[in-house]
Amino acid sequence: MATVPAAAPSSVAALAAGFGGAVLTAADDSYDDRRRVWNGMIDRYPAIIARCADAGDVAAAIRYAREHGLRIAVRGGGHNVAGTAVNDGGIAIDLSAMRAVRMDPARGTVHVQSGATWADVDRVTAPHGLATPGGVVSETGVAGLALSGGVSSHRRLHGMTIDNLVSAEVVTADGRRLRAAADEHPDLYWALRGGGGNFGVVSSFEFRLHPVGPEVYNVVVYYPVEHSAAMFKRWRDAVTDAPDELTSEAFVWTLPDVPELPEALRARPVCGISGMYTGPVEEGERVSRALRELAPPLLDMSGPMPFVDVQSSLDPFFPAGLRYYWKALYLDGFSDGVVDDMVDWSMRRPSLDSLVIVRHLGGAIARVGADETAFGDRDSEFMLSIDATWRDAGGDDRNIAWTRDFWQAMRRYSAGKTYFNFPGLLEEGDAAIRDSYGANHARLAAIKAAYDPENVFRGNQNIKPAS
Image 1 (cartoon, rainbow, N blue to C red):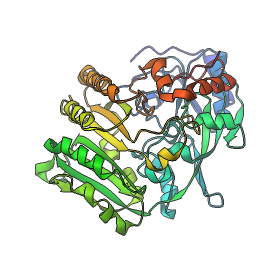
Image 2 (image 1 turned 30 degrees about the vertical axis):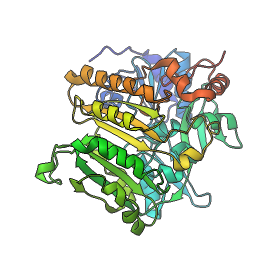
Image 3 (image 1 turned 90 degrees about the horizontal axis):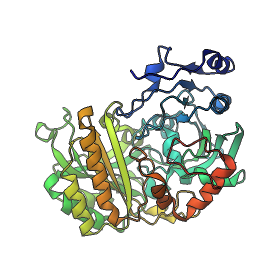
Image 4 (image 1 turned 30 degrees about the horizontal axis):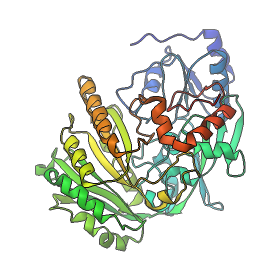
């Protein structure tokens, strides 16, 4: 175990005295469990973990950190690939006990505390045939995904998660508790929709709801991996005129070694298509048929499925404790040359657990103007995500190097805009952040200066305050 910087007992006691939640140090039995996050590659030791019970606790933890010169990390679901939920020697503001979810039928919205996961949200909304665009792995935390974009399984029909944010309760660097909405602190509201955790700690969100399900048509079809290039090209052509109700992605992966699959297919490298049709279920089979006939299929598992089950179907394949290093890139186009290069790199995966996936965007996402949210330009129709996943620490260097080299090789097909929910280990620096936000970066830096002029919240893809 690493040496954990010890906070003075008297100062920790002072924080704990007025705290509704729990204040943990390395001396507490639960400390080691609470410092761990989803990515097994992250091994960090905060001096203090402040498990907040409410926004008042959040404000107290921020004040304490500033008074004692401690760097701040903020934990929602703890699912960020880069491990931004914890740091070494600082304070981790842990929101994971704040998980309440409440529907507001009159407003057609759902209120979600920042420690909730998307499974918590779906449990409340799905029985009513309602949803807001959220994570495709249900154990993902709401807060991190929502603040940096959010690409859901029905993104083409209902947009990104940030496009459905109605309001947010925010604790700022000076301890103020503000409501950000279109008619209240509109500059902060604009910045939160894509600007990440740069402007404060969001204690709760209000999202717009849409009719989804309770049953949808789920698309899952696997093809022989040797058909990868042809499959990607045919999929690209097939989705050119896809209705907004059809959201899909194409991938190279390895089938899991599970008894639910035919023995001959277990642990077999494959390419394939997944997706969801969010219109009438009876239309789903017809509308998705072309995606299920791109090559001779190995296995077609498509069919009607409860939306809440679709949302959790990937959970077993991305469990806590494996080692993850994911990077994404918005592509300027998806030409044959792009496909061929991407498939060539995919066939050299050091770990067969790794997933290479291209998500189809467009639809409602593309109808939001570049200056309407901090997220910026929405012109790219395809996003490449390189999701390196492996099991042993001995594979760290090889898998990280492959991902970085793959990502760098594909940059010639991109303006350099990355997706901040898949950030590697935050190694790209200021230039990549400016490239990704484009013309919005200057406005974000000015808003940062207004709400966090000392850059208290910097354990992220950091937007530095304007001078």
